[in-house]
Image 1 (cartoon, rainbow, N blue to C red):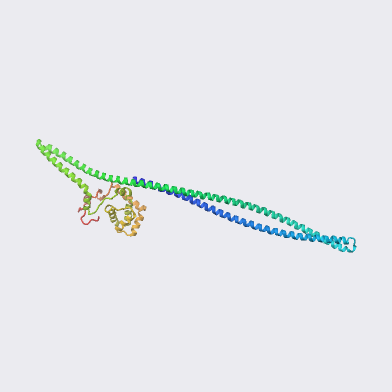
Image 2: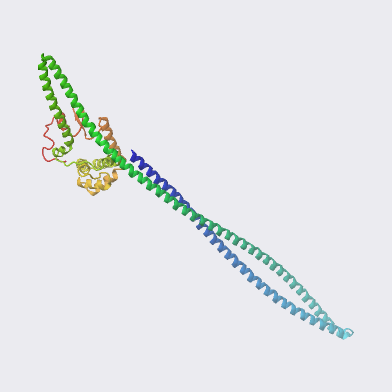
Amino acid sequence: MMSDIVGMVSYTVHMVSDIVVSDIVDMMSGLVDMVSDLVDIVSGIVDIVGGIVDLVNCIVDMMIDIVDIMIDIVDIVSGKVDMVNKIVAIVIDIVDMVRDLDMFKDLVDMVSDIVEMVSDIFDMVNDIVDVMKDIVEMVSDIVNMVSDIVDMVIDIVDMENNILDMVNDRVDMVIDIVYMVIDIVDVVNDIVDMVSDIADMVSGIVAVVSDIVVMMSDIVVMVGDIVYMVSDIVDMVIDIVDMVNGILDTENDRVDMMSNIVDMMRDIVDMVSYKVDMACDIVHMMRDIVDMFTIFSQNTAEMMFVKGTLKTQRFITAVDIMDSTKTEELSRQMWHRNWSRDEDVTEPASLKESGKRAGLSDAQISRGLEDMQSSEVKARLKQFTDEALNHGAFGSPTIIAHTSDGPVMLFGSDRFPILAQVLDEKWEGTVPGESKL
């Protein structure tokens, strides 16, 4: 029970460690994704700023072209003004020359036409000036637009700087979390090591307690045998005393009889001592009786109370469902590993080795290892266990003999003579031929 508690504590510590580390790793992964998204956003903003800069460059180039056009227009207008001034001067000279001469009337008319043409030129110059004003206003609007774009670019750059500052803060936070995770992992490792040390200490205590329990069990069995024997002796003494009181009339006869009784009791005590010695050697004697080498496990407590035999029982049950002709030999091989060679019977490698010795193929062994976790195997094993409990089984080996009068339960490997009698069979000893065990 202590081993189960320690195992549960160790499992809980590992589970908490895995959950904490997993949550922190997930959080770090989310932060890294967030930083990656921010970097993508900054990259997109940089691309937008680059596009805006290209647009501003295009606008500036367009403004330069417009200014060049305006300069050309101004040069043209200046040339036209100079030409008009010259024409006006010529006209004035001509007017002065022909003002009083009627013969030059036609020439005056021609001059008038020239004046009208000059007036038209001035109108055209005014129109050109108006166009230039419109161009100047358009250039002013473009300058204002460029100024707004420059302000927007400055705002975007400021936002980009803020995003970069935020990214740096996230990176610093991720670094702090990494160091915190390292500290947590170190603490969890220390806790796991401490739990492991406690588990080892508890395992040692369980082993010692198990040895004490086994020793006390042997003592209790021996004391029980002695108590039954003493009880029989007391009953015998009482019967003898009654018989002596009824038969002997004289004190001398009583003394002689009591002397004989004392001698008989001494013989009985010698017999009890012999029984005690025989109980100590019974295991070694059983080896010769059943032609089988039997040893006790070096760590019986771990075998019985820590590892258990549930996996072994499930594997045997899975093989029984698959091929019942292999069940007896597989059980025998498991027994040999545990009680003849002090080897494990719970690990997959141990189950495979026993299966091979029992004549199972590799495919059957693999299927048995897979099926032992199935609900069918678990249900069959539970059914067998419930049947044994219903018959009153309390240990091993428990034998159920099904007779015409109903089931008869026998317990112990020394009950085979009784089993033969119940089955109306002849008992020929434990090893009539070569023992299968």
